[in-house]
Length: 478
Image 1 (cartoon, rainbow, N blue to C red):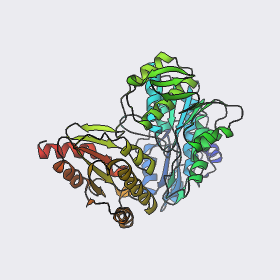
Image 2 (image 1 turned 90 degrees about the vertical axis):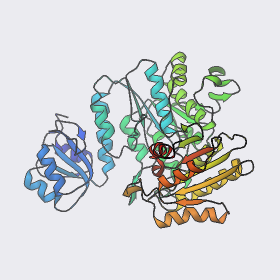
Image 3 (image 1 turned 180 degrees about the horizontal axis):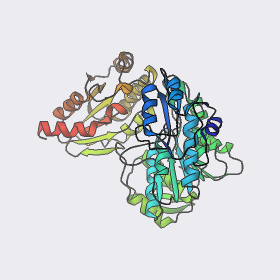
Image 4 (image 1 turned 180 degrees about the vertical axis):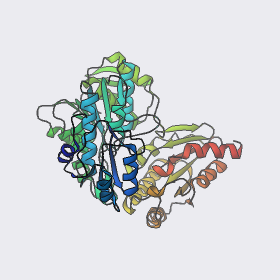
């Protein structure tokens, strides 16, 4: 960024510059990890943050929300401060700059959709690694920097430390701040990556605090396809809305998975009616995981990866945390990031139903996400129980607000709690409520027999479940 001045940067991101016009000599970064010459992107900053930036000798600060006397202090201390109306424009610029500066010769893939995008991206990453390529992916087994609403991905690309041959970037289909939808997020971030391949896994209703209909979900998600300037679209043909996206393609090729080019039938996964991977070689057998595998395989085919490497990458794959993860065998404890109606239904559908066993479900309410998504999640849970469990198995249901493990941004409000529980009461579904995740899991484990199955489902409120399970197992000496 040696040739980029803060005055030019401000113009390019539709911002206003306060303070001097500096040359930017570092990378886009966070305030806490910034080095001299870096450009700091931060949603909000006050005068204390400006003083810290000055001490770190950063080239500039970019913010949407300058609080207190931030602007005055910046001008007094000679700090370049750029204010923007949409912080995502700055982050999209940072991503584009990082790709062009550090991965300009790479082949690039964007993966988006409501469910399955993390698993699909990570599967493709494993295929490319097995094929021997240097690959950066913003989704890994430990953490997911997939929101692109901060400079983490651009920072990681800049600091990768070796030649990047492939980029696999997971792009959220919808993003927002508490007070607004980040409109056209998928389009903006996909355009910044300038991908050779775009994968769309599915479209389902989620983020209902930001979008109010499946049509809005379609509009936002389809932005990734609209931003595909050249290259191949990999589309889920089993999802009617994703299938519809091929109509947006003009001069682009596309690969359909689920049916059409790439499908699962009988002995395994077929491409062009030839058996590519046998069912026995698949790391997972459930329907939604097979869809994720086909999506990753479709992307690999679009990139020209050989069949041997594709098969090797699939067979050797180890799942991301909280993707139908097995935490214990007797009783069987399954942990899954089922956070929206489609995810909840798919997870419950794939619970192994052992004879003479009880199914114990511990479900975390989604905190600070609104009343409607919790009503929809509760209804999906009820439908899953009625469709897959109630007729054949005893069950116990525990609902939790996880107040002992969530931060302020994920705290369950009283309204969210009531909206969830009322749906269960209306359908006469018996349940226990526990405020603390620890108490909910302890009840499940203490009441389970060795042949039973415990399912842990939910988003942020269930994220710490693995450590809680370990603690409870130790306490109960199981």
